[in-house]
Image 1 (tube, rainbow, N blue to C red):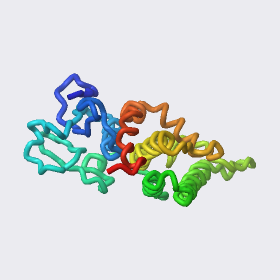
Image 2: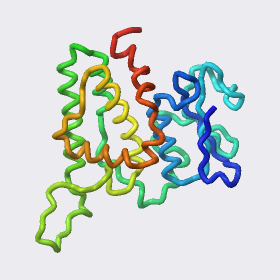
Image 3: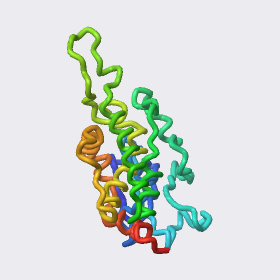
Image 4: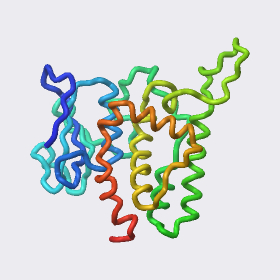
Length: 238
């Protein structure tokens, strides 16, 4: 297994198990795993990451039922199974209040992407739906937040300059959305020749800012992992 050590002067008491790639070692394609990896990194806590080849489960996980997929957390030696739909894990609840952004905007982008890639190549309707979701995201990212508007100034800010969903710092909302956008960016290009249109300037500003952050860049699976994961889906192979 591969392990990342943060602040590893002492033995870590948090171990994150994430899905291994096709080689059984590197980071696999799993937006839920990446989300938790980003959350821990963002918190600056001390932790290790172990990639799990589910064909040969490590001893620590041997009691888990078959078919239970990562992510898992060993937290002070207690195993915590992180439910995929559970945005706020036990750890992320201890984020400082200023960095929990209200989730004012929820994307349905991933569901629309799934329909788009499953129906390829006859997916014009699904492409339209996907583009509509990207437009919603773009509008949100380009709309100035209240704190960007200076009421004492004569200048009107018409387009937001913020880096991320809810301001200039990464929050839980970004940890949830960015791994999904990465999957879309890679798989839709590979199998559907789809690229996020350049005129979605807010989305591109967001992705470019994310690409500069270690918490995102270093937790992304290799493109080939995403491509392999969607090969059967895009080619309608069972």
